[in-house]
Length: 278
Image 1: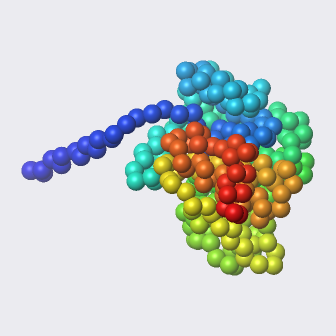
Image 2: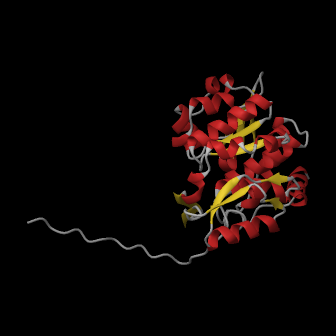
Image 3: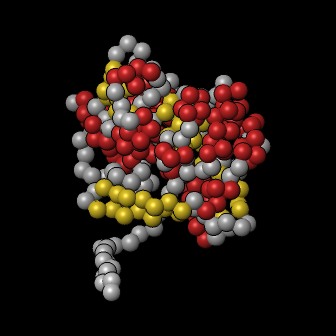
């Protein structure tokens, strides 16, 4: 007779709900800094979808191009936080009903855009369609390759900028190295948490240092980085300066609980940059 295994119960200390999703997080990050952001995506007709649309509107993000799916629920992420770090379970819901056809219908919007940010919490074929259209229209694309399981070689080759963290870089390329960085000059930017980020500028390997901070919750730090980097590049900063700006933004974001709660304003980031120069 087999012995039955007892199930282990883990007890948490608190529970909270916050608006999120990588796309929404990155949009909020850019908008809070002063960027003009149009969001393309799908939500369900449930309470979460309604709340998210209201939230994005309050963040001055255009929701004109967000569809309300009548069948699927709004995508959610369950985040477990311990000792300042986190593990995430994503349930895509309506995110996976955003099709290449939806993207094709937004071609005029893409053509008018200065830069497009895309991540991988939507269908692989939809992301590839975004990159294909941007490539045809010569519109720069920042690809945040997360989750990496959905990332394809075509995406990597067509992106203008690609921003994996260390774990994602390990999963995609077997880890970052001088040779890998040199293969993608001014394109592959590997984020290193509190250590900053590293890239190859065409001549040298450059590590842009991070900022000392008191970590409360790392959820959304990478999304903050991406939104801030896109904002900085869009406003004429060179890659190194854009990374430094994004590092400062990300360092502020981890000081509060929730992916979006700590996302800083333009003045907040400039203050951190100035304070570190004193």
